[in-house]
Amino acid sequence: EYYFIRDLLEITNCPWYWGKINRFEAERVLDGLPDGTFLLRDSAQYQYLFSVSFRRYFRTYHARIEQWKHRYSFDKPSDYSFCSKTLHELLQHYSQAEQCMYYEPLLLNALPRKNTLPLQHLCRATICKNVSFQDVDELPIPKSLQTFL
Image 1 (cartoon, rainbow, N blue to C red):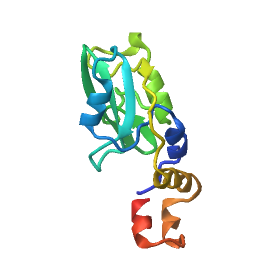
Image 2 (image 1 turned 90 degrees about the vertical axis):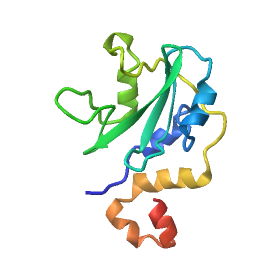
Image 3 (image 1 turned 180 degrees about the horizontal axis):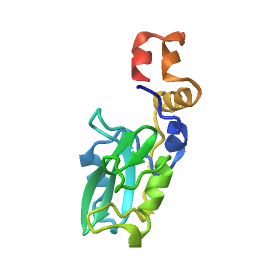
């Protein structure tokens, strides 16, 4: 079943969401910052929507965010992994050091982006909030834009 990310507009409005940057750009931006500093970005792999790049143990790491049945997780959804209904809730959970295992992301300090997101990205987020995936074909926009959504 296909569907839009309903909270994409809220995610887009978060200052720590950097949009479409790759892992190397994220590493450059985070280089030398304290452990616990992080940013959220689009995943480079089409199977995943988002990735978190974060500092831990004096290095920059990257973690893909799984999304399944409108739930977010850093692991495959199971009875043993933490899942949340919103991306913000997932990131908040991993901001508490006492809840993080040594191999999990520790997300203490969100790094605000320096640039505004492209208008195309903001429009997509607004459409995703207000239109169902099944109704995209009805939108009076070119097929290429429907595919982008």
